Image (tube, rainbow, N blue to C red; front, side):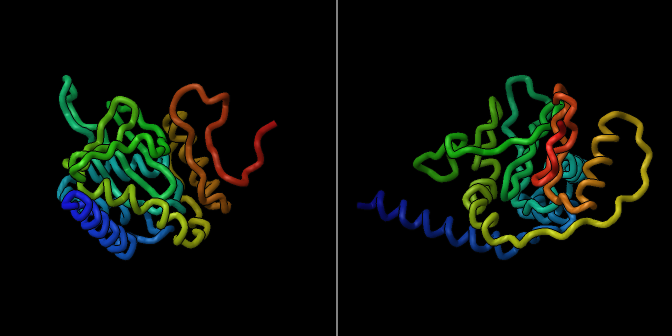
Length: 210
């Protein structure tokens, strides 16, 4: 009976925190650097400029401008890992960077490991573990994803991209993303670095190459 009462109270607290996050989090279409600043502030990491720059770069490469950013989290360290991996969670997916390799990830229910004590759970991304004890806002953000996706209004096309120097093939792919978003494909994202069958950008509604 006592266990049920505690579980019920924990669920009520989580529901309250989800409502608070959705009320305070920047809306869809907010510049990604502003949304990242909000997430880092909630996580108590706002004073780390290098982390902010890395999170903004990660979101820009792998999260569309019409995704609502909800949380920034870091993985557990250990096993010879010099730096923790970084995760940016949105209402429709996530982006992860680990050891210089960045990619998009879609959390599934089986990736969320619950535990009797709420803070003992974690999100698994392959071999990476993003614990709720180290990232208290992650559990709330995961619970808020469905509501955030349903309640967020569609985004408007972004402004014309600024001219910038293209030094690498990846730079060219990111410029293509900027132009796709400007042309109205606001969910455009670059495909991960590596074998991609010649497809550099994905966007809903864009014609598939023949």
